[in-house]
Image 1: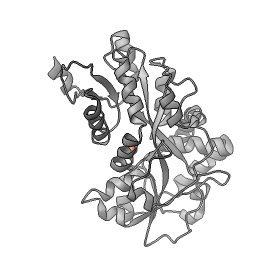
Image 2: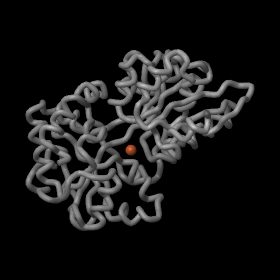
Image 3: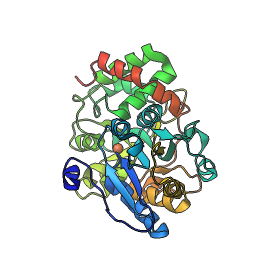
Length: 334
Ligand code: FE
């Protein structure tokens, strides 16, 4: 039975029966990204952490399991996912001084249902050879003729691009946002395909000059022997909105309604915003820590600083439906 569950996509990193209760997490995050920080927690507290990697359908799973769910915590990326889980009513509010003092108010839910643990910017990867310094300026400009036949991106209906589109809507309204989406589509060198790193490979291969991508992928590519070359062919540019900053999204955590091991789960949540854990995140994932006193990794520091956009995460989440409709209307991925 356990084996069957494992084969169906649920992997428990550890099955143990220690004196202390384990913490069970449902997560969509890549295992290698969160294992180091969980290991540090176990080392410090003796509390084991079981990670169940779930590729979508976390809400349905929690709803089906109800009060019998073994899950204490949910970890995922993207504000749309976090809000969707919170709105489904499967999370409980967590009152914690430690969390609210470590995480800026705009990076956690008003009802204390979800808490951001890291942030990441959605930026432009630009060819070192074919794109001049200062040539990439704003997100708005990506729809201008300058970039005709020069842009690569993953599908417009992917969460990362929908969140960016949601920000465009917030800044300029629906109609202008649709024009922007059409403009960017018209500038594509090829139809949207692959992930963020595949676009950098396309720049390296000469298929396009710029791409949209999340910052941390630069760190990941530099650590991969094959992808290093792709990474070294581009530089990171932080575009801004004409009347704002650089688009930022989050990874985050929430406690389930069922949470059978509530105390240990809270202990883990608080550990994740500690200087120690935030440093591990920065170092291993090349994301930006939410804890202000924590430093970014050396690789991330090299990219320089940027001004985060002013549109709130709540607004991004609220605009997601409209963003998806626009992407479909302009047939962005067609
Ligand atoms: Fe990602």
